[in-house]
Figure 1 (cartoon, helix red, strand yellow):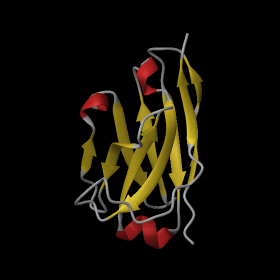
Figure 2 (cartoon, rainbow, N blue to C red; figure 1 turned 90 degrees about the horizontal axis):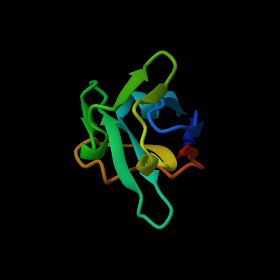
Figure 3 (cartoon, one colour; figure 1 turned 180 degrees about the vertical axis):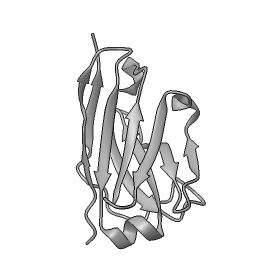
Figure 4 (cartoon, one colour; figure 1 turned 30 degrees about the vertical axis):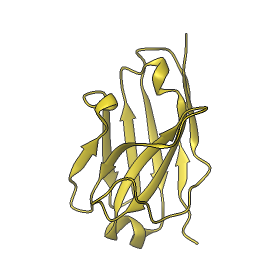
Length: 120
């Protein structure tokens, strides 16, 4: 089973920044689109940002202009730089992979995620 491992979460004040990182196996990383998702308490998991194998990016409207997704092919990592964080960004963040034509369809099992809490 392919492992997806997220890291980098924490507690940050509103307006602050965090950088999340996700690692997975090389083949999954190279051949698929990678996405970041989040789930806040009481809410369904939602798409946040994605990057295709060719580097094309896509963002949820709620994070456009504040979050940036990137990948490092040498390290098999996909990062999410989160700036200007708001309390409503508080959630557990997960990464997953898919074909990139529908970001709501993922192919992997969900990992444990990383908690992001935005609070003063």
